[in-house]
Every structure is written in C-alpha cells, then in structure tokens.
Image 1: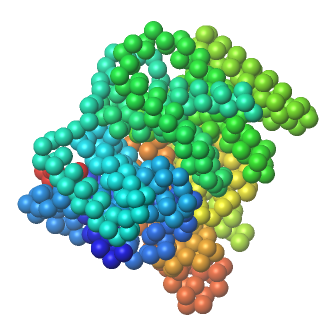
Image 2 (image 1 turned 120 degrees about the vertical axis):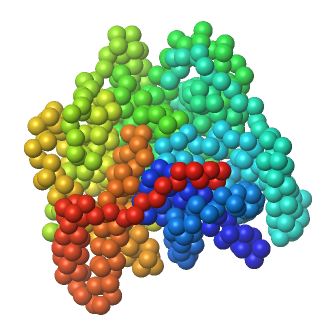
Image 3 (image 1 turned 180 degrees about the vertical axis):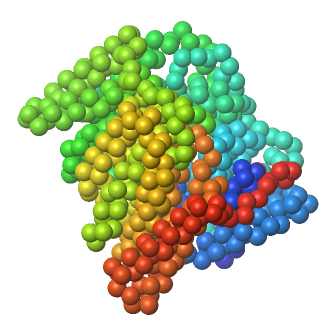
Length: 208
Length: 208
Length: 208
C-alpha cells in the first residue's frame, strides 16, 4: 500500500531524529546517536516481529530502511540546533507515524493469523516500543508510559482498523479511515492536553 | 496440569499487581500501569520463549492471559491504597508464583529437548525476568539481582525438579514436591532474611 | 576456526569479568553477579541470533559456555580487589574480544544469507550488545554509545572483513587480517584517546 509505505518511511525518519536528539542530550557520540536513532525508528517493528516470530525482520529484509534512520540521525546531529523552529511539524509527523506504525503492525499480526486482540496489540507495540526502547537506552522511565494520550491513540486506532476490516471494509479504505481518525485524535490530544488518569504510588510500600 | 495452571493464573495476576504498584510509584498513567503489569506477569515466559525459539508465545496462543494481567493492573490502580494490609498474602502468592513459573519454565525447556542445564535456566528465567523487565522499565537496578534469596530459590527449585524427573518420579509428583520445597525455602528466606553474600565494587575502577 | 574460537572463549570470560565488576559496584549479590557476567559475555551473540532468527542460540547449543561466564563472574566476585593491577591486560583482552566477536557475528550473518550490510551489522551487534545490556541492567546510559572508538572499531573491522571475503581472500586469512587490523585500531584508540565527535543536546527541547 503506497500511502502507508510512504508515511512509514517519513515516520521512521522522524522517529530516528527524535532518538538522535535524545541521544545528544545524553552526550552520546556519533555512533551512539545513529544507533539510538535506528532503535527509535525501527525498534517497535522489531519487538513486534520478535514477539510474533515474524522473520526475517523488516530491516533485515529491507536494509535500505537503515539508510533512512542512520542518515536522519547523522544529519540531525549537525543540524539539531536549528530544529526547534520545526517543533510543531515534528509533533505532527510523529503523530502520523504513530498511527501508520499501528496500522502496519495490525496487518503483520493478521498475516500471522493471530487472534484479533493480538493483532491490535501488535499494532500498539509497533507504535510505541521504538520510543520505549529509546528511553530505556537513555536511562529514563519511558515517556509513553506516562505521557498524554499516545499509546491510547495507538490502541483506539488499532481497534477501529480491526473493526472496519471485520465489517468487510476494504483494507485500503480502512487504513485511510483509521489514519484520519488516529491522527485527528492525536492532534486533539496534543492541542487540549488530554491524558489518562495517572496514579500516585506514594506511601504504598512493600510490594516489590 | 491443573494445579500448576491454577497457580500460574494466580501468579500472573499477583505479578501484574506488583508491576502496577511499581508503575504507580513512577507516576505512570493508566496505560503504562496496564503495560507494566502485563510485562511483569508475562515477561519471564516471553523472554524464555524468545531465547528458546519457542513460538507462538504463551500469551499469543492464549490471549485470555492478557485479560488477567491487564485486569489486575487496572483494578490495582484504583485499590492500591487499600492493599498494604495484604502485604503478607502478597509475598506468599509471589513466592508461590516464583516456584510455579520455574517449574513451568523447566517443562518448556524439556519440551524443546534442551540440555538439562538449559531447562533449569529456562525455569529460572521464567521465574525472574518478569520482575527484571519491570525494574528496567522503571529505571531501577533490578531487585532480583540484589535481593534476598529470590533467584536462588528458583535455581534450587529447578534443580530439584529436574533431579526428581531424572529419578523417574512422575511429572505431577515432581511438580508437587518442587512446589512444596521451593515455597518453603522462599518463606524461610523471607522469614529469616536469608541472602547470598553481596560484594562491594567500591574502589575497583577501570574495567568498563 | 580454532584461533577465533579460542579468542571467543577468552573474550566471553573477560567480558563476564567486566560485567561482574560492574554488578559489584551496584551491590548485586552473587547470583546477580553471575547473571550480569553471563549477559555481558553472551548477550551480544544472543541479541544477534534473536534478531536474525538464528536458532538455537549459541549458549543453548553449547551450554558449556555458561560455565565460562558463570565461573569467571563467580571467581571475580572474590578476587576483584586484586584485579586492578591487571587493568592493562584487561583492556587488551577486551579489545581482542570485541574484534573476535565482530568477525564471528559477520560469519553468522553470512550463514543466514543476509545482505552484506546486515552481516556487518550482525558483527557490530555481537561486539557491542553485551556491554550495552550490562549497562541497561546496571541502570546506566550505555558506555558504548558514548565512549571512545569502541563500536567504530567493530564497524570498521566488520567492513574490512567483508571486503576481504568479497575479494576472494580465504576466510581464515581474512579473519587474521581483520583481527590484526581491529586490535591495532582499538589499541591506538585507547593509547591516543581517539573518539568520535559527540554532540550536546543542551537547550534542544520539545522533541520527545
């Protein structure tokens, strides 16, 4: 599917840039920046494929994807100081990428004949585990586990997409609708600061 | 094996609750709490299966397990403040779960025709990697690598179980004996504060 | 290949010792020290095999490797205070191990009929992911992503090795040349403090 694939390429590039910037904050060297960019861009799909036993991995079958992520991280290292003007664009591309990753992940789950709930989960994992691995490597509690509606957008996008397929909507139309819905949802969540309730565990001791 | 399976379900629920509470301490949102609960409950078996190449993963073949872990984490988020009365119960369930996970892991290793030492290791990994992944996601040095006899209980339970099977004891009797031994060992370790020697690396520099 | 295999065994032992020392600094107990030693020694090959779908894993097929890593970590726990005299030896063995791991990793990639770029990457992953997992478990930003020319040595060693094979040089001669080149490169990098440029991300906000 051409549109989804184009968005995929844009998204891994954008995710690699976000990883590179996080790596720079941790004073990584050029190699570290390229590696963390690649992990951020392709890590979600990698975790999904390893969990599903879906070999060969995407980037092993298509090594050219590595060119995108390594190239994006490399360039980012040199131009990062000029990027803050692009913060808004960046958030939008990131939101689009989240939604596209999710739909692609659902498709992989379906290809593996997984239970529908697992297909949705494969979508969510594809969407969020790149950023999650980035944060683990940068020694942070993963942002996606704390932040505004990020993983939740992936979850509802995946559910909607699966529902549409179940209703016999064609895959391309279902992708388009899910993309539009998920992206709008994400933009609104950013715009209005929507978030899930979070909980404080202060004072709860002794359950390790 | 019905008893082992029942204990397994109770254990993933208890582990998911422990993960949820740790997530709450890190100010995760509801999604993060459910994810970390699931990783804690099912992560050990997942790491084991990925290392052994034992596909499909347990929770992909039985997605209903996710209902247990997500449900337990979800409920915990709302009732955690009332749980500290249950600390003792919790420790006991956790100890039982550790032992049950270990025996189940040994069985998976044996099903894969792995070397007996690998089967024991598969048991230990099943027992401890859920908590280990939980701690990595919560940005902690894993407790199981530092704590009182936790991993060691898994190790000796696995060794005993394998020894009994080698002595031609039936699988169900061997499970029962290993369960009883491991659980007693864990309870005594908690009760008397048993621990392995730990070492200080203070002043040892330059070996990174 | 006997030379490479010998270096491999020496290297997993040395890496396990480095992991053990790092674990001692985090006040791990004896079990934790043995586990982190094993992860450091065998983690790189494990990540490579899981990503390539190359089963069974090296240490599952050859459980005796675990004896080396567990034994090395165990002994290190007791003699670590006397090891600082050996710092120079240690760095040399570690450098040799890095290069040997890389060549072995390239070979595994080639065995799997991967694209040449993936084979090089398999080599780099084998070389650096043991240390990377060690640092994640010790709650550190991985040193290999920040440090002097470590990963870069793996990268150029892998590239040279693949180039030599492509030029029809025999595998044993190519291994020897790559070993010599990589080891010399690493020693010079340590001696003269060579490093890649690193970047500061200070003041770049809002790209998470």
